[in-house]
Image (cartoon, rainbow, N blue to C red; front, side, top):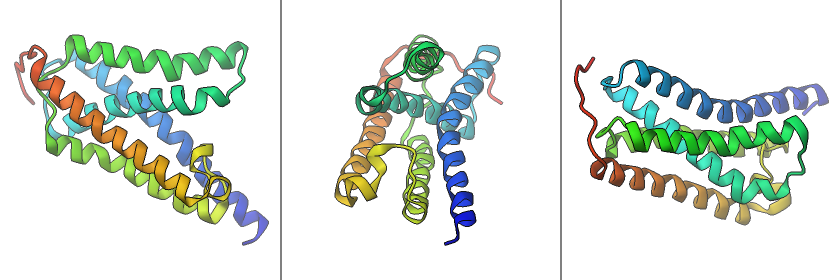
Amino acid sequence: MTAARARSVHLVVAVVAWAAVVLQLVLVALTSTVLAREPALDRPGWRVARLAGLVGITVTGLVHFFLLRPLLDLDGADWVADKLLHMVVPVLALAAWAVVGPRPRIGVRESAYALCWPLAWLVWTLAVGEVDGWVPYPFLDAGTEGWGAVAVVSVGITALFLLLFGAFGWLDRRLPAVPRGNTR
């Protein structure tokens, strides 16, 4: 691979990695804003988007807290942005869902569809990382950590997604229901 091609591939991987984090924030912001205006909105795709955002931002917060935060040495505006994006937003998203729902909205089908995005992202990141040598997170670096360690972390994070889908589904059925009202 030429140096120019390698830079091009690296840029694509970097953009996809950045987009994954931004997508979680956008899903949470968009679904929360729309639900504030139309709390009774209930469509299959909407349920998947809401669940994907909620679980995705929760995983983002947990992975950041346990795996990435110990590696960071931030100060000033970087420290503030890091705390807002990786700690405050996940906590607020969870609190908003727990308080205002909407519920019931989470089933096995929604969970299965919502899991497609993180799995596709993982496969893409590992495949392109194998070609390019760059991955967005050190625990996904097979060149440094080895494929065994990357597999363990990948399975662990996927299990975390599944656990959270199950936990949110369980809570969704037990927390007070939010009236459905008009469905579109």
